[in-house]
Image (cartoon, rainbow over all chains, first blue to last red; front, side, top):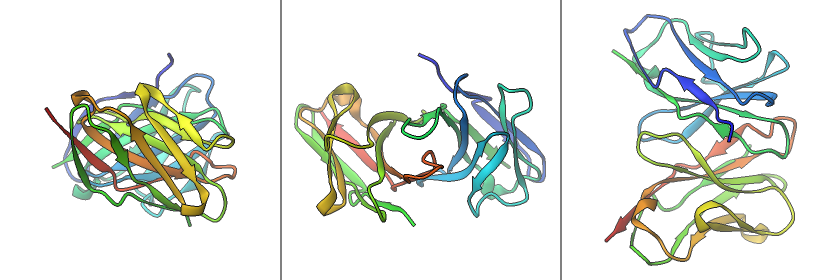
Length: 113
Length: 115
């Protein structure tokens, strides 16, 4: 069964550094998402992406965050200048569209030191 | 705005016992409803979903959930629990609009299974 794949599984970075989290959604999916889960807390929506643009974003997704689908297969989340509170598990998800469930990747654990 | 409440933070059951995890939602219309399971350090696996039709939905691993509109609930059930089902369970609601993939998650219920 096709899967959403995320790399790396664990990323350690220093505060203030830029980090790029990578995702390969399922190939025939059209809608792409990033979610975040701070340790011990609930999963939170960050951003949705459709037709090569952001369709919706949460208040968490401030100017330090950006997303891109550079080549038609990868879907990336960039954090420009990481903060300690950005430490979390970041999940990528994709779906074909309405009436289709989200497929989640296994996540990237980001640790900011 | 949509919201999800999972009243039980932690549930412990004995292996072989039945299980019911509670989920209540708030949404202006009939939502999309989901249950996910997350093992430690792992991603989110979809157990089952409700979009429309039969209010009793069957999922993977023998799980089922019933959508009760009058109670705004979508409780997850399993007749007999195996030790391997110990994990975090999340209920989620999605809006019936152009961005149905934007789901709101509950805080989760941690399931412990006693031998």
